[in-house]
Image (tube, rainbow, N blue to C red; front, side, top):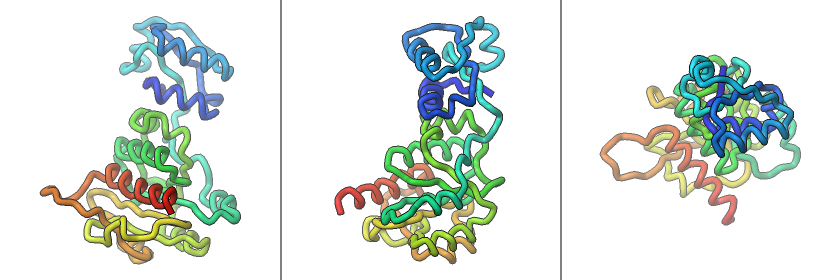
Length: 242
């Protein structure tokens, strides 16, 4: 499996996860590619010169360069239990819970929002989350290499654990209370459901409230990745200004 986007490759290497990858395949040494080659060498990643035809065969959407990675889903990289244990005395923490977000483009865009607005963890249900490391990495512009992610077989139980750890849980719903009217400082977990069915019933019942994004459009809802950006921005804004 190969990463081909400049940002995706660069951030994979910078994050330190690139040390488990390689080699970096180079066919065309343009200015941007040469910067990445230098970064790879600095991080002790092998660089192999290959022909354009060979690279085309391995990574058809390449831009003259590709990084070989393991064939995993690129998602979970820490355990939920370790995240909770590592909170210590922190009063502010922001968790984003994804209930069956299966589109890797949406998942990647959500991770990019999480990186920009400082989410501490993205938590999903294993076996029912987006699984495509290349698309996720490219869509997230490499943010997948930086945003902590965990998976759990039971989101309902995970929400109960978060509550015991002092988190307030709020679900996203177009009919919910305006997001800007709720205090989102402190330990907060935001739940986003799939665009098809929304948040599952049992998970919704565990939420302390539902939050919405007031809008005037004729379409009934925002794309889930756009909605995630709005919720995360508001949480970040309150944490900075309060």
